[in-house]
Length: 293
Image (cartoon, rainbow, N blue to C red; front, side, top):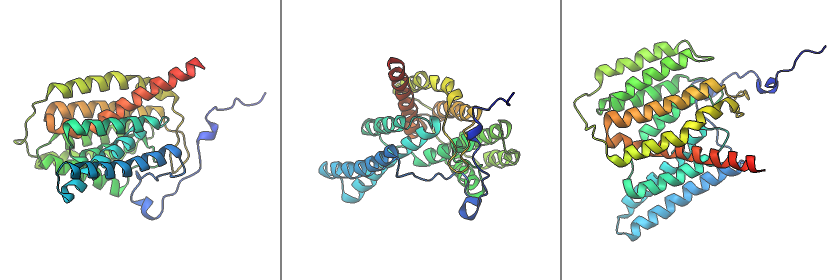
């Protein structure tokens, strides 16, 4: 009798040996311009930047300010798209929807601090390992550096959440044991954090948005068990437990930042909230279309 086959036997890829810049930056992911959805996202990013710049100029804004605002809006779209790829690697269209919702939200609410989205993007990649590699020196400098900076600006929850993310990473499947040391460094940044700055008042429309995000994104946690996406560098199937941990951390971090630091941090989380909503909406539509076939 032949040995029972493993249905994921083809998901183990090849041995990955980082070299060059990859030895210092493990969470960077290449942009695949051959992929039609990725190409569409890049085209939309450029188009939004140009359109928003022209719109602002026609509404009386100076050229320099118009360019900054246009690039900021396009960056919000792009970061929302990229975060959506970490929350649901199997359904890229969710990022396009989330990015579009981010642009709409910017018209009414304005732009937040993009360092927050960069921090969140790297934290999610560390937890789900979508890059196919673990976090390395440059990644840790980015995550801990941003957390320390934001903590110094009065958002003390960032060093705390960064430490929690490192501890979580060390304990889940295939965790890196040195993450515990890095957690200690991140938590040590709390010593230099500013606890006397900021207002934690939260407007009701952010509370509604968080509620919608939770309801629409919650089914994603169940679908994680069926993930088929593979790491960019090693070709291995993403571990469902790691992806689910990243999703759970996203919900916990996003909501706690808004509740502890108020409107300013809720505004900065808009691209991430919209990414989660886009993922949830597209997942429902995608599953419904498959059921009806």
